[in-house]
Figure 1 (cartoon, rainbow, N blue to C red):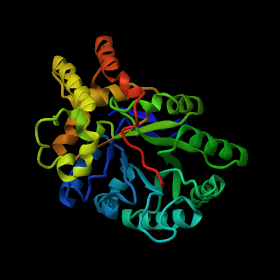
Figure 2 (cartoon, rainbow, N blue to C red):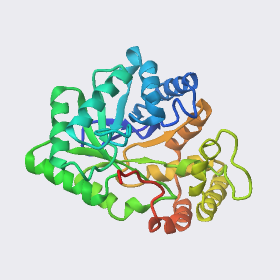
Figure 3 (cartoon, rainbow, N blue to C red):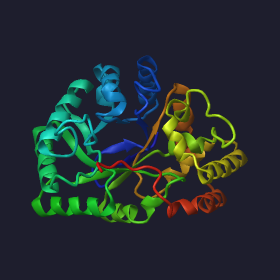
Figure 4 (spheres, helix red, strand yellow):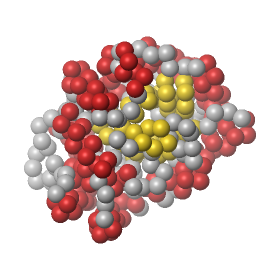
Length: 325
């Protein structure tokens, strides 16, 4: 495994991380723990979850899977901010919501601290000063080690960093954003900001929800057990342009005798400011396949091919973003 610093922090994270959105949903508890342990044994130390994944089941499964010494082998990251219910104070980044959600996450994860606590999306109704002072308190209390953002626009992230600098508060060290060959929009504004401010980028949907694996086509039904099979709403994202991109990536991958998913992840690993890529898995075999990307070296010719194929997606709509409105 290869490791990188998370932004300008002193925290080292595995270049390939483990996203756990599927835990308790598309992967049952037994399979999820097998994936978790296999990832740790392979050198993956960055485990990412959220309080809303599988209606809290993801955190609960990870808590059981990390019992004992394995908890101290990983950088454990979770998030709060997206809706947990329909009632008042069930979402956002107010002091009330963050503190309650952190305590619940600590209980589910069976730990006394979170290594990277992330605000899941920008909250337009809560002053950033309130959010950042709350996060400062959580770091000072020892319950949180580092803080990160997710789904922030570039101007929102810069505003938060400016407030932290002005008030002498903890800074965000990372940001999660949709980033892949099918979504290069972060390269326009977010990446230059992160390079300038020392913020680590943690891409989610690095394979565009599985589209870049080459397993989907416009003519055939979605494979059994795939995201599109279990979540029919996902089909809205499988446009002709994205399927065409996946076909092109598959062609390039065949010339290298590697899997399209491996090629797509390897490309992302070479992009500036990227610290750790959170790729999900629903089986140990899928995890092991993703791990092959860490040691792939891309030639200039392949980079040019992928640049040509994916350039339109630098200026298209983001593949995904999660907001409170």
